[in-house]
Length: 341
Ligand code: PHE
Image (cartoon, rainbow, N blue to C red; front, top):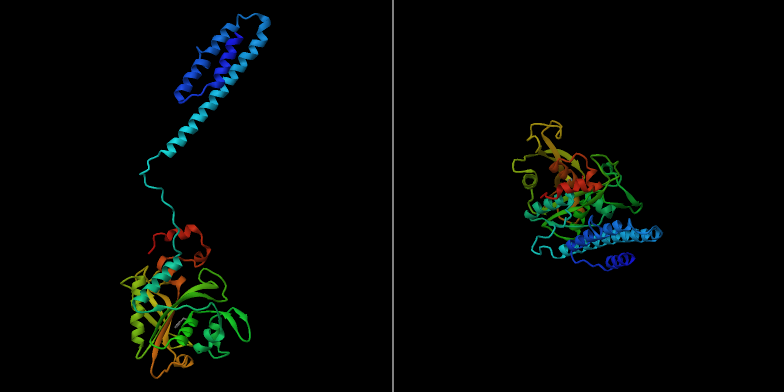
């Protein structure tokens, strides 16, 4: 009997099945109800008592070893078959799609605004975010100590001479006038900085797009028509605009531009506070003092300028109520613009 046990132990150690079926057959032959082990157990009952201890131990060893080895072999076979099915998969099957990132809503709106004005012949101009007093204020007809400087709370980096973070991208317009003679037709997108408390409607960093058009015989009517075209392109064909008198040091006359509320169609709602109108930008005819400061003859040339906040346009366009969402970059917010534009 001991020989039989040893023989079975050897078989268990050496067994190498090629398929799960073969392994199962082996298991039934050794461990099955009518298998070899049970047959040995049967014989064991009639073994002489003095041999029982030793044979009992050997039988247990056989049982444990066989169970362990069969479980291990089963796992091996399973892993092998998984690997095989992975490598021999359907090679013509379409690949799994990579999830691409998407443009930030502020970039989407900025690009769209730039695109609308480029159709009107404007080119994009750029300039530094850290500026001097001349380009942000003085060349734009802000006299020293003039209260209009307080309209935009400024972050100063150095005093005397003043170095500061630009509060508007009008500074790019000044830089353009230094480099270029009329006709000038530029659009100036960029980040601007104002020392304002952060809230749902204000931030200390935001994005602006300003425009400047200077040529012979440019009139207020040209400005009105250009801005109406812009408003219809951004907010839809049925959009109307209105202008309200305003004040900026660098334009005269100056105006604020409102668009008809695209949410209620002008009837009045919570977003437009019942007025039917939404303010979108400032504009005006370039003040002759600005032209003079930049060596452009105001007798010969005239022009208009306008400036708007990109966040504000994006909020109105997408119905976003809290400006801070544009800066937090929460992907749950950003993913909503995957398909936009
Ligand atoms: N620079 C102004 C601002 O930042 C906007 C503006 C630009 C107004 C051009 C009129 C003309 O508020």
